[in-house]
Length: 300
Image (tube, rainbow, N blue to C red):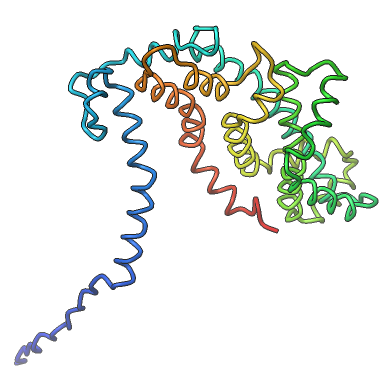
């Protein structure tokens, strides 16, 4: 007969919960201050855009609207005055789209092909060309503004949406080419050599191999360009004539043009309407933007 014996339970030591360190608290406080620095003004802009002027005159900028109204948004879109024209921001919105689309096509297509050639093909004087591109990427726009005005005037596009789009594409080419070149440089040369052995030409390799591998970098460049072009003011006001001014220029004119009482709720609604398109693009593609950066989009 066997006697069953039970061993006494082994006491498992409890892990001490780590408290929040002073360093973590300091980081959280700093991040909260940074978030408040941006969020508090944005909150004021949003709530003011839904207030009536009677509520705004009370001076309680942080108070929620007593009566919510979308009338400032309707007036900003359809009736806000920019100079002598009172057709709202809608004209500037469509002008910005007309500027944005050709500028994206020109800048991204040219810079991607140039970056592909510099990274994966033996181009003569490639080092010198890259150095010139690097220097051109940091030349202030104000230095070359007058030559660009003369150039666009001579080819007949000054004061048109095409003129603004071409200038945006020209100014973006150096930095975008460097970004594409650094990204394509990580592609194994054996892959290109194998494609060449299969009778692949320059354009066939680019279209069938390089472009399908460029989704991450394309999203990165797309977001950078959309944000830069849509939020631009100086190029738009310099090269955009009457009827070809982007949304930011119309916004500035709406805020400056005041007859009688200043409509702060309309101004705030106009600012939000101008900022919404790039925000929508970023929130829609933000995840891919991070993936593109971590995949080596701006790695030197």
